[in-house]
Image (cartoon, rainbow, N blue to C red; front, top):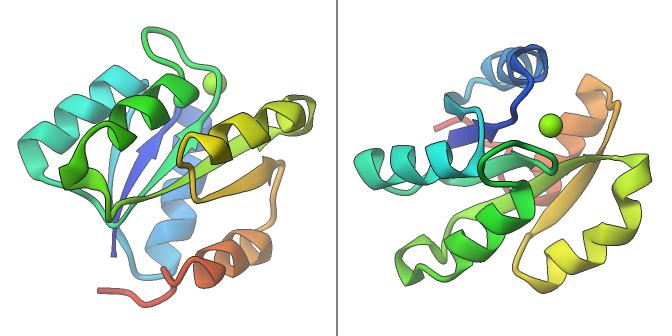
Length: 124
Ligand SMILES: [Mg+2]
């Protein structure tokens, strides 16, 4: 599977990317939503975007709105990766078209379980 990892923290991107590699997946990375949309425009849709909430330039929720406004990205799943303090806003993200969410901090097992729930467990 092809994943787009979107987070303004390089450390968190690295952590997520390491887990994706261990699970046999491919990835690209972006530091904010705007950069992510540019990468998608240049590389085509990904199977899933893993999206942080708070980022400069374009936040996670703005990315969800922008991505869901594009019919060609309808098949791309979006998982919000968020801290517990942002839990109330999860409903907003799901209403706007996010597929799933995962709370920080998370274990490798929780991450793999979430991907499996989304049907993203097969490396391809
Ligand atoms: Mg952030």
